[in-house]
Length: 124
Image (cartoon, rainbow, N blue to C red):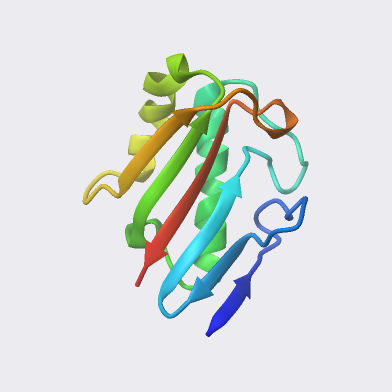
């Protein structure tokens, strides 16, 4: 059964989508921008932006009873693939063992001038 997941501990959806959708033990978390949910501000540096994206994802997962340990796949969108190594320095602080599958793309532009956006799929 499909269930919509949302939390005040992550930025509100700013369009026609949900923060996440859970269905039969799998949760699909929408792409998270590096917005602080309390201030709606975005840090400048790629490492801090990556950290904020993953904090937002963690909050959404927690709301649904999941954790980063349940993440099976991530997708990273970068405005400059030259930032991959810097993004990865922060990413590995959140995913340290049993790494999820991952793809990472460079895109022309991300919403609100973000340098990174990350989505995940997690499974119980």
